[in-house]
Image (tube, rainbow, N blue to C red; front, side, top):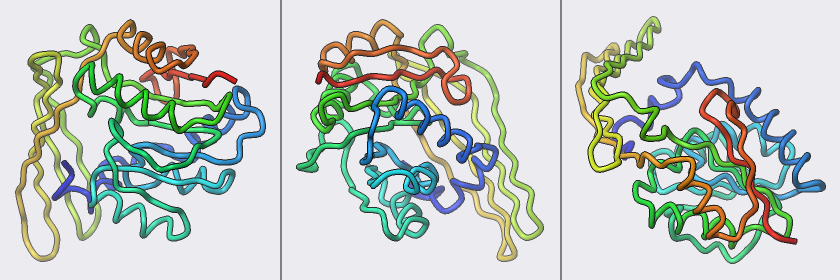
Length: 233
C-alpha cells in the first residue's frame, strides 16, 4: 500500500503530535486497564506511537506493510515487530493493552473483515485487557469531490501529495498523486488506498461480536473519535 511513500510517510504526517497522543493513550489504558504492562500496537506504521509507548510498556508492533515496518524497525531497534494482517494474525501470546490508531481499521475495508480484525485483537487480550481503536470516517461524515493537498517544504526536499475524495460500495477511495523534488530531480508516483466506511452501529456490533465491552469518546485523540473496549475478566 505504501510501496513508494513509506520513506516520506513521517514527513507527510509531521503535523501529528505523537507524544501528546501517546500520553492520552497511556492515561486511558491505565484508567481502564489498571496495571497494564504489555502492549501491542496493531497497524503500527512507522512506529512513532511505539517510540513513545515503548517507554511505559513492554511493547510490540504489527503491520502488513513491509516498507512501514522497515521504518518502524529503524526507529525502534529494541521492539519486536510482526509482519501480519490485522484481520488474521496469531502471535501465540496475549497483551494487557492493544492499540489500533490513526484510523488504520479502515483498511479492513469490509464488514466481515472488521469483525475478523476485532476478533483477532480480542483473542490477543488478557482478561480485562483494554483495546483503544481510532475509527475511520463513517458514511455520513465522508464527502465526495473534496480536493486535498499536503505540502512538505524543506531546503533540499519538496513534497506535494494531492487527491480528490471519492467513494464507491461503502469504500472511501484515496487516489494519491505525489510529486517529490530533491537535489537529484523530480519524481511522480501514484498510490490507491481503499478504506471501509463503517457506521457507529457497525463498530458496536463488531465489538460485541468479539466479546468486548465498549465505550465511545466522540473526540478521541484528534477529533476522529475513539473506541475504548475491555475484554471480560
